[in-house]
Length: 149
Image (cartoon, rainbow, N blue to C red):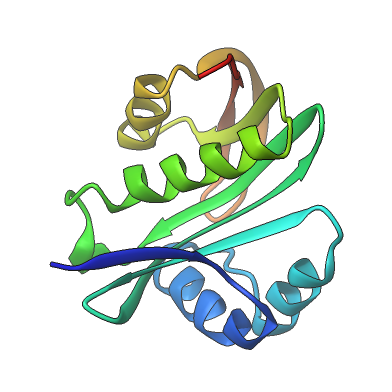
């Protein structure tokens, strides 16, 4: 499988929203994705496998901090290292933007995602009670301090 990660643009808003709708119960609409892509510090990455869009990552970078909002990989493409590829590309972009700390919120039940983030050095620093809806669930707050390469 040939994969590529690239920085998404406004022309990709609908594709990004379609990936979201396949993964999240509270998916961003194409209009919301389009609005995100207008942000000065907004970042969206799109991952393709053999030319087909199958994953995305949205976040923001405003040194010295950054935040990952969403990491999505279509269900049929999971367990192939694609979320890892998206996260690696985002960390490279964050370092280039002189970001020192990255933050993310993860559903308490999403142990696979928490494990992925821990493998990159993210650590839990708190919990937001009843943060997520559909279903109601706590958010685990995680942070990564970026060092020199």
